[in-house]
Image (cartoon, rainbow, N blue to C red; front, side, top):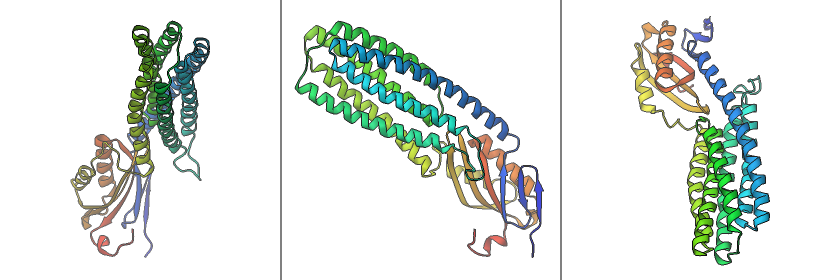
Length: 325
């Protein structure tokens, strides 16, 4: 028998139990508008952060050469990798705002996650370089012009703190990655400054190597978290703020729903969450699709921020016909 479809604005509803794809009609547009607004702000912050980082990298490169400071030269090299990372973040945000098309139905939102993953891996690689350099410097310390070194590192620290202030409110994994890069720069500048003070007071040149090793440990912790979160998104793991059992219970409490199965929840990109599920409803209420879907969608959005939903409604009879999904 042919299924009869009833088409509603923004929904696809099938009264015989086949798949129903729905969106949160009242909340989705404002949510997308808010997301676009946040992304525009993040692009501006990243652009300013990139400009500041370029200036400080050049300052440290020249300062390190003039003062014969390997620490400043190394930090300048570190900041060159940050310039690449910030540029990659900026490009990812630009591409992620491109509209979806027939071949890429989610658009380019996942570029942000790929960029965050690349940044996390790059941070881990940077820590290896720092650790190797610290080992060499501990074994063979070299004399440094400490006064100019301290001045340049202090300027770098101030600039990095300003850049961190620009990025600290970023919500996406991409901007979090950029923030961690700048945090690594700030810690490196602070370490160089402290090292200059210790060396000036004690003459113990190995202090710089020890501080550098400590910095690498801090960066590893942040990089690990970033890589873990990015991999979770790529593996379509359940978002950290969502309790699957709570979602299942919420849907089961909707009037007419008797069972929830084939429940999947994942992250499309930062702040954009999706859900698919099958709802088994009482046979007399199969025709009340609109009422059931509206109640479920509003609860999912209000409690968990999930606004991209694909929900299949099944009658009690249909649910026992087989395993075809």
